[in-house]
Image (cartoon, rainbow, N blue to C red; front, side):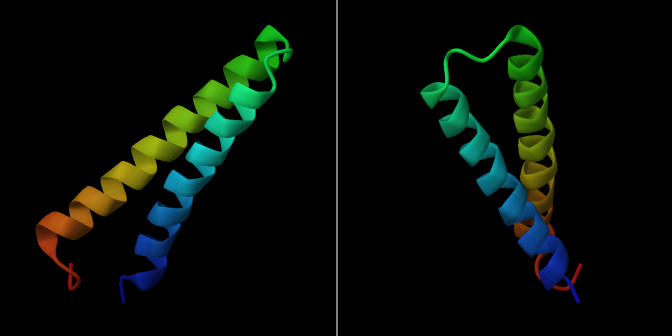
Length: 62
């Protein structure tokens, strides 16, 4: 049963995109908040990319 893991990967990519949009519309954020947001984007996209690439390479049963 791979659907929940794939869904989490897609949601991670979407959340990363949402944070990028948020950062682009709020340029007045302080350096600490901006750094945490960029770290969130990197982590979310790394996890989401891993899940989606693994799913595409191995198929739905792995």
